[in-house]
Length: 249
Figure 1 (tube, rainbow, N blue to C red):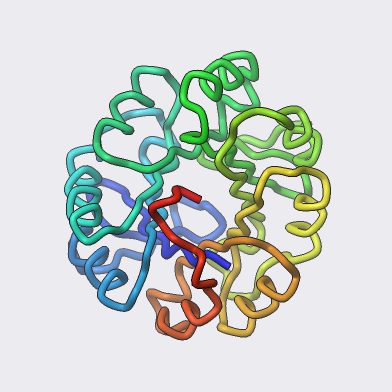
Figure 2 (cartoon, rainbow, N blue to C red):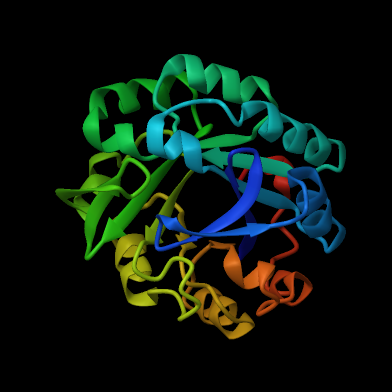
């Protein structure tokens, strides 16, 4: 299982939200680069970056701060992916030009599927389908809007495209420290051949173990790392030797 420590960015700061609520924010004092260094020093081979401002309004105001993290991580041989506000080809080119390994696209994958299909063909295996779900339905625009599209249906639409992975986030569990929604993650994994990355609610090393035993290929860990509920080194024990970041998987 691949382990992706999360670094969420808002206003150039490292923060965490609960259930995607911008009014329920916790700020962590270290700079973004210092936080990246913390996880890399503990053995992280990859980092999951989230531009919360971009997710909310589509801006790229955090890109200078994010680029500093990516440059630092790449020098250490660590790959980075970015989600939040990836809504144009120009933004894709800008973000990949920073040295990011892959980009997570959520909102436009739902709202403009033809565009997303075109981008997947233009940037093969560089895009990740991001599906955030509330009650099994896709949530968009930084989780501020709920749709009437079942999450599984959206995943099935993109079968066969050169997509790097699918990040599946259960909004109800995200940042709540109550464990991941494994049944929904497995339902998603069984509905598509795209590798599913479980996100939301991973709170203990036992959660990581259960996800690994369930056969999920990767998970993202956020708040539990920041509050000391999970020691990253313990979680990384579930990574396979073949999980080589140079492969971009």
